[in-house]
Length: 176
Image (cartoon, rainbow, N blue to C red; front, side):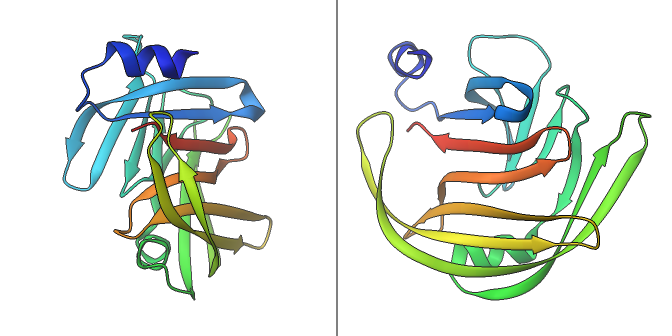
């Protein structure tokens, strides 16, 4: 319902997305509030609070004012493989805030593989042909699998991405 309401009320050229963090019970329709190069900062479309998510080429690289935020991610290697729709292995690093407000860095090795082609239907009814890219990441203490639906231009239109030990996975999708 919130997605349909946002699609009706926001200008037609305004980018919109949805996000859900099941582990902490957060769900929102997002609007773009700032762009800096390839980085886009998103916030809830119907709120003025300071909670935000920053993406780089569609991949989450930071959160602010959520729970134990993802401070930054070194994701260029994963992004290059995912957006290029190529298989390969690459390093990946996440920095997040723990319960003591200390920054913790976890270094991973990610094996990216190409999955099946699928049709992804956006909330505005547009159907986008996409390829599922799977990124299997492991460190000494943790393993996770991220999934990205990537269109022919390299745009991530849907994803399920590990964000941190408290936020867990984010499910994010473009609405238009």
